[in-house]
Figure 1 (spheres, rainbow, N blue to C red):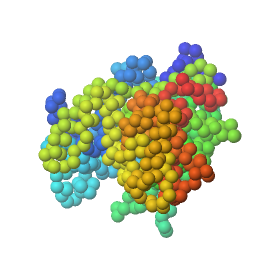
Figure 2 (tube, rainbow, N blue to C red):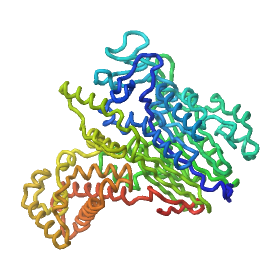
Figure 3 (tube, rainbow, N blue to C red):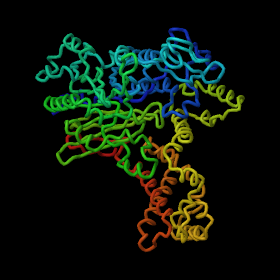
Length: 637
């Protein structure tokens, strides 16, 4: 049964992870940096360089505009609830936290929005406040400006700061206590208008109580951070290192029948003790739910109890956290590890199948995650009757910029839509500053980034350019094997097709020798004859290069079916045929044996790469679908 009345059906919640809010026009309260004057509006701007953005998986600066556009869209749609599944700030710095709070409070006061946050690995970066900063803020002279907080190596509390460095507490990375202090009204603490609110540390006393027994004052007394801590330990050689850390998880009922479960899946494992006796912990970025099962078992007990109570009381339970609960690469993770550089594509962030099963056995059915900056749906169904749907919500600060909108429907149905931010007002407001930065690079004789990103006509196009730069400057080097990266990126589509038809006689392993061989010319003739028989135009394959395929692979990985508009159906068909041809060549090796082991190895890896591409295009519905909560079946809409 559902606790919703007919009038309460169609309750909607927007999920916006990975905003990475950067307070572009924020003031340094200590007056250590006054920003760079934006010639467009005369305002002093504190931004990161475009060069830095093109090497990062997120757009630092434009999040300032994208968040407002997304919230305006939410208001326009009449949605009242907005969940923020982690990384809502750049790195939890005071400057950005104040700016974020100001934006959220505006929409809360003027439009009646209610926000519910969950911690991410960027907020907090570590459980306790620590010195931090970056070398790549844009300086007044158009060159990178280093800004660090006191206590960092660049700004030691004793001694002189590194030459040219600005020292300010505004860029310190805040810990749990300070971040929750900023956003306590965004779900982290109880409020009088909540119908129910609890944490994993006080739920035992609430097991037999329903929403009618909720008392704000009682909940407030249980919400003190001193009562929301656990001990985490690690054995290092002969020493056991332990630390008390806050867990910020909570359950809230903002409207009758809807339970929002915010899970703090951060795990910061203690690693060492410094000279002052302070425990130093690892970051949580690659820990995920495997570490939760090991170090936070109390969370599973609580989640299991929450799911049971939700079922008994007829509540619709939507859970969210920063980290994925299910594999997010359309079941191609093992192939990725084989075909690409092992461990690349952030494979260490994948939860194992046993981890997903353990989470499903809690009774949790729907989970919305962030962290990966991708649009994806992962569904796991188990023989014991449990299922778990993990919805990977995209980031507003990456390609494709979007958020998820979940609507509770009659008949225990859940409608899931992906809302793309095509147009963001003022997304180009910083372009003159970027042009200033680029001119200074050229004057200094340094490599300058591709200026075509500044030709973007809308925010989606801008984000697409950003991903292109990220592939060129980071992913190609990190993810792709040397032989493919160094020898094949310039090949056109016809070359790739010809490669599938090669019948090499020699044992040479050099690609340049293969292309100069008679076998290559023969393969070319076979391809053209094949195209003619199939009514295909081989020249279509000559119009693009393998590097174009690489860029489209990342678009598809990030955006799923939303990337099709940027790739085009004709090109997609060519890619898929290329994959089919590679597999066909491998499957016919019995009648046409390989005489060259190096060729067989490379063809096999290329077939795996094509299969990964296919997987990204064939996964569960992600753009718009409906979930039957009773059965766990997903229907594409």
